[in-house]
Image (cartoon, rainbow, N blue to C red; front, side, top):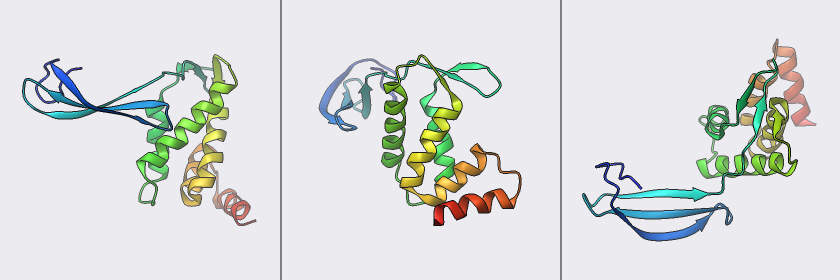
Length: 149
């Protein structure tokens, strides 16, 4: 593993532990060249599917793109990065269990909204307003009313 400080690939693993409910390994490393300590994560790449967009385009699934959309919805909300990572893990697991090599973007969006609704209702409404492209305040109010019911 290359040291993020000096770029050399001489390091020792100082500590390893299981994270993400056993689906990943966190490793603390020590660079033997410069002494810098850093953390790496190792996990099974289960998301080997293609996302089919609304317009029919296909693109490889990108976990970071999904996380950035959720982070935007959760901005200034009491939602930790660990909670967001766990949410994305659950979405990936649900999509992966379907066993499909191509997944419609709508299925991913709906899975995220289902999880966000349980995590933080304000973040849910923010995500829904972008995802569903509300055209006016009435559509926005309808979504908020559905939360209150």
